[in-house]
Image 1 (cartoon, rainbow, N blue to C red):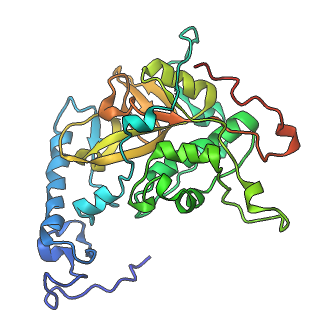
Image 2 (cartoon, rainbow, N blue to C red; image 1 turned 135 degrees about the vertical axis):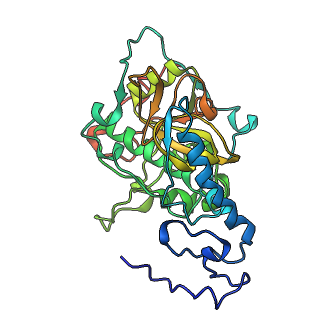
Image 3 (tube, one colour; image 1 turned 120 degrees about the vertical axis):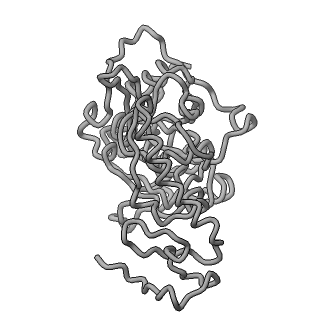
Length: 328
């Protein structure tokens, strides 16, 4: 598909032009013409020329444990544009004061490898990959996706909850929408207000409030890797956050650990399992792998989740004790 954006001749534009071709700044990789966003200075664009050297540095390191490559999605991004996608705000102690910390008994025998997609193959939302677009809404995506999965795991209910409902209705309680938000308050919103599904309305007589799906609670999972594993094993995927460094933009395969680059921001994702490579590297699993057991980039610090509520659900789900799996 052709890019509908007209590309100006670089002889006809200046550095003041909001649609100036990036190769005007010296970036000529991939034989593509990229266009900057308005009012971004040249220095920000040329900063990403360093990406090639980061890729080379990682791939030349035999101890890196992962492989890097130029990511086509980010090749025309400035640093500020990339940072904008990393919208999860760090939790403060006051935010966490009323959030209980959940543990699980270590008598549970956990498998060495676990993938929620194969453990609950009927739950198609676990495998569903959503795109946050150019919006710093990772905090909302991680929360909504995890709760959708848990409705299937606990009730066998196949629904995709609406990220847009959370972004539009949580307001300043959660933060600033696409400009970043607090995943803890997203889960609190699920408890107090609920969230609708992505489906179109089928019953014209149904009230909007009656179509809401709720979380019965919100809790933190102990940062002990075993406890996190037990939580996923018993209750389904969880939302986690981690610090993103510049090298993560170039992750291709393997078990990620920080090698080089500046801090870009915080990112929220859904954690769906774990495993160990043939080389003995323990990892957390999702749509990328990251080192497990060493709190890599803070990924084991801030695990927030909740259990689905039977409120507003059809009669056969009424009376289900959704807190039955949790020990505090």
